Image (cartoon, rainbow, N blue to C red; front, side, top):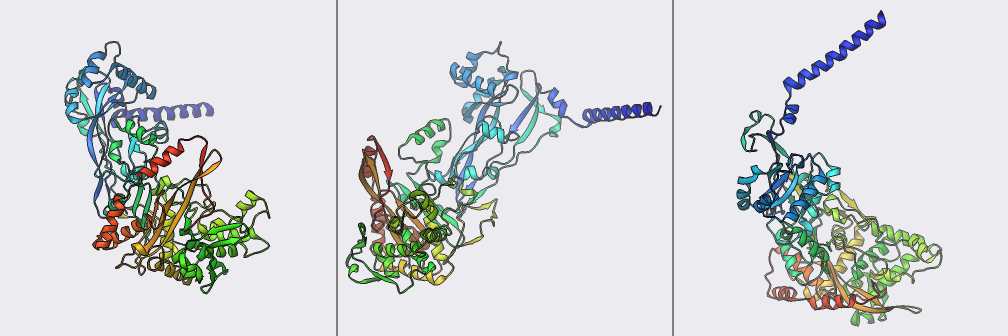
Length: 640
């Protein structure tokens, strides 16, 4: 009897729970009513306005404009009685396109809405809307798309595109076929901030599909939440000025505020227009840009890798001082370059070869012999264990931001994990243990060899020297909805902490503008510290080496006292560092600090740079690269 009583008690409890649940669903919720009445209720998806993007001075860079889209729920479409010809005439598409879009929608889902025709302008949509009731299964949605207030900086701003299957799979609760998502730049890295939250409105419809009233007094409606506005660290006036200086040139420019790591300018040339990647022709334009041999969508400022050439000598000297293999009184006499056995690195420091060269003057005149001698001492610090010396040097270099993975707002930078700075272990693996020495890898002393860096890393190097041993991670995002971001303010220290070493290097960098390779473009009212670099490159055709014009490189920070800006410039095939990169870097620093270029001499320099055109050089290189059996490389033997 007790078992039977327990059974009836359990049965009664379960029955009570089920009846209570059914009562609650029927009386207190409308979820299933909505599902049952989905043929008479229109569920309108409200796509939120995407957040705006501003520069640091609150200049509006990116906003929105409204368009309409035709959507379809395939299961609701009456295919047997559907007038395809009338539909195609109404919306203005070919029959082949109709069947193509229908198949795409069915493959996505027969039961969920998806975009059938995107980007319908307001004036055209008015005529379509009048006849839409004739075509069951079809509806419309209003959405905003991007409108760019500028015609450049795609590498920063990025662009949006339709979600992929992976996007929908990763966030099926938010995205559906036809939605848009950030594909590159800030649009991608700040997607979750910019996109907002979707809303839903429910409407009553008559048998023709015409809306007659709101459903349930709007109680089931969910309000859309607009996306957050994003404020960048970019100074648009400086960005535009830097882009103007890069017309008809390839390369990258990075300007950073060394006091906090905020990126003031991030230029990648050739420059592309983000407006071309919006609208009906965006796919065609995207394909054209992807096939462009100049690769305008490749961000040279943060992705391209170059031999740093003589700009890297700053790190050789700092490492030598820190490791104790040289001091401030160390000097070497240069005999037209570095010579050791059959190994020779030529030097072009002019009449300076006649006298001993110290650590400060070596930077100013970019003496190859001096830095080769220093690097030889670094490698041979532990004579019986060369690997240990190179490893110690490599760790010092890496602490300066090389091989460092910058934060999320530079998503495209995360190309890791290819090593950019070689170590002793690397050379043991490459040549064999005890089968290499300082002369084998002496090209590292002048920033050639296996060393590869990006423009943003060189700008960060300039920031570290300006700060005398520390940096703040370079970043693009300043504020989200006017709330300052704090997460990037962490100070990162290098392995070199003795400020005396940095003072020595800074003194040499100032002399670059006084007696060295930068004196021809010196700014007379701002004290600057800089360093030229001329990076050689070549191609191999049918086993024969063929030289190409050198890359022009320059880094600087200014003013020397209380630095406000650090700059790196790399001009592909631009010649000597003092030819194009140096003048551009100095003009950018002057423009930022003084807000204008007023001096007549500097104005003439500005005009020369803006008129300089490397198109013929690039056309020549393009013709060469069309030849068979070539590959690009580096020569381990370089000048300044």
